[in-house]
View 1 (tube, one colour):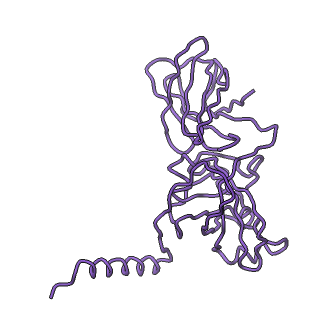
View 2 (cartoon, rainbow, N blue to C red; view 1 turned 90 degrees about the vertical axis):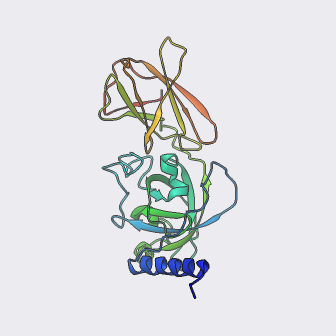
View 3 (spheres, one colour; view 1 turned 180 degrees about the vertical axis):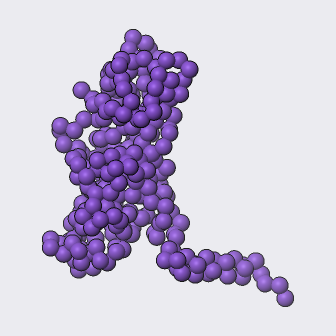
Length: 264
């Protein structure tokens, strides 16, 4: 008698779990995307850490978002990789989350705020935060950081929160390496509120027409055009929650590749 289709599916599922476990990876389908809604509701997730025990994450290569120097203010190493519903193919870059843990005993149960600066493609739960060593250790009782890191994997509670940067922090536009008169790549960072960016447009000084940039990768937006890109340009960005802001003439006429320009 031939096996039923349900029996075949069950065997296949069990085999997949066995193989994943044998390699130390039990992949779990992701949950729904975390949107820009704020409230008191806490969700459950798992958290791991990577890099050095007190490390700050990918400060040199910028990770999957492109942010560099995440060990310095305003991120100060409080960074992490989010799985698909958190990273959202780059649209989650810059978003802020509150995390806390109450188990094991080393956990402080006091919330900390982390910034999404990278991607995590090995989810062990519907929501998975792979934190820098510094961020992971910040959830612990003072003096027991290493004990918590030794646990390796934690069950945590989390919720989306608005990003609040120090008053002297300005929205920054980094003109990416390789930009030239016919190609402009902009990395947007330090956005208050939603933290993430879902749309970027530029407008040349003296003109009324906005030019829409396309998503390139991570937090980088780009435009390719046969027409020479001569500034100054006003930049308009849109966040996931629908907030639109215009930064007038922030990209100067003599803009240079691999240089940052701040809001005034």
